[in-house]
Image 1 (tube, rainbow over the protein chains, first blue to last red):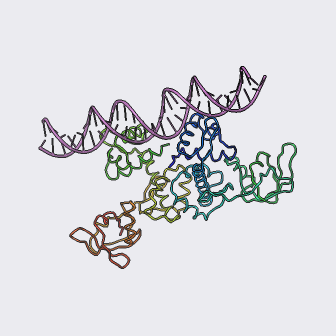
Image 2 (cartoon, protein in one colour):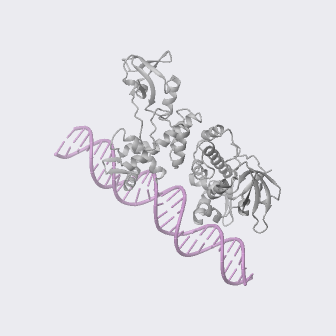
Image 3 (cartoon, chains in turn purple, orange, blue, yellow):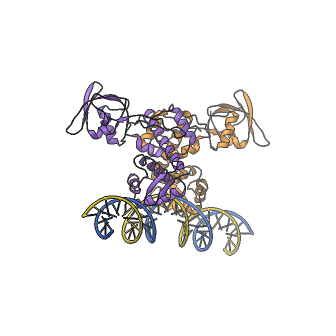
Length: 216
Length: 216
DNA sequence: AATAATTTTTAGATTTGTCTAAATTTAAAA
DNA sequence: TTTTAAATTTAGACAAATCTAAAAATTATT
C-alpha cells in the first residue's frame, strides 16, 4: 500500500517518462511543486520499496511494479473525469483538480463498478486513453493539428495540454472533442493556422495548434 | 481548511456528542483507533483553531464552526453512500469504508452536483437523514423495534448499527429499509421478538431489535 | 583539460500526527 | 475522608514528508 504522496510521485514520474527517460530530479520537483532535495528523499524511499530504479545523479525509471501502480492511478483519474463530465455536467476544464483527489480512493470494487456504470469508456474528456484493469491502453493514432498541411483534416480526438485557460479557449472557439476540421491556410508570418469548423473559418495560433490532436 | 485527520476528529466528536455531551477523551480514542494521549494533542489543536471548546479533564464540545464542518462531512458521507448503492449497486454493508474516504474530497461543486444527480435524497441507505447544504436535517420520527408492543408495527426506516455483520444478518432475514413489519410475540425468557414480514414470521434477538428503527 | 555553471545530494531542522511512560487529576470505594 | 482505581494530561521520542544551506557530482564552456 502506498501513501497519497507516494502515489503522486509515481504518477508524475510515469507522465514525465513519456517525455524523457530516465526522469530527472528537477523535472519532478517542478511538476510536484516541491524542492529537489525533497524529491531525492522520496526517490530513495520509492527505490527501497522496489517501485523505481534510481541511480544517484542519473535519474529515475519506474519498475514494472511502479508502472502498474502509476497506470492504475491514471485509470482512476480518467474514469472519474468521465464521471464528472458525463454524469455531473462538469466542463472539461473543471474536472482535473477534483479527479486529482478522487484518483487516490482505494477500492477496487469502486473502480470496476464505476467503469461499468460509465459503460467502459475508452477515453477521458480530453481524449486521453483509459487503460483497462490490466493496464493496457487502446492504441490511438493521431497527429498534431500543427503537422497537417493545407486541405488535410480530421476529427479532434484529444489535447496535449490540460490547463483550464487553454480548454476554455478551445471551448469558446467551438473546438471540442469529436469536431471535424480541415486546414484551409497556414500563415507564413507566424505559423498560425486557419481552419474550417462547422462551416465557418477560424484562425488559431501555432501554439494552440500544437496541442490539438487529430485523427483522420 | 482542515486536514483529513482533523476532519475525522470533528466527525467522531459530532457523532459521540449525540450520546453524551461533552465528549470524553477515551471515547474518541476508542472510536478513532488511537491512544488517549494523541487525542489530547489533537483537541488542543482543534481548540486553538476555534473548532471545539475543550476544558482539560472535562471533555470537549463542538463550536458552531466545528459543528458546521462536521455536518458537512456527514452530508458528503451520506450522499456518497446513496451514490454507491443506487448507482453502483453496492450493498448497504459495503458502502461505509469507501464513503469514509470519499467524504474528504473537497469540492463544493462536486457535492452540489452529486446531490442533484441523486435527486436530492433525504436519507442514506441506512435510513440516516442527509443534512442539506446549510446543515439542516429533515426531522424523522421513529421508535426502536424493541420498544414496540404486541400487534404494533410499522415500516423499517433505519438502523442504529452500521457494521457489516449486522447489516448482512438483516439482509438475510429480509429486514431491509422500507419493509413493513408487525410484532406478533415477545418472548419473556430472553426478550427476543417474533414478527411478521412478507407474510411469514421470523424471530430476532432483543439485541437486533434494539438497532432497528421503525416509523408508524 | 581546466574552469564555470547547473544539477543533485547530504546534513540537519521543521511540522504533523502519533506513541510510550510517567505524572496528574477526577471519580469511586472503603 | 482517606485510599484506590480510572481517566486524562505532560514530557519526550519517533516517522513521514518537507525545507534551507552547504557540499558534491555532472555537464557545459572556454
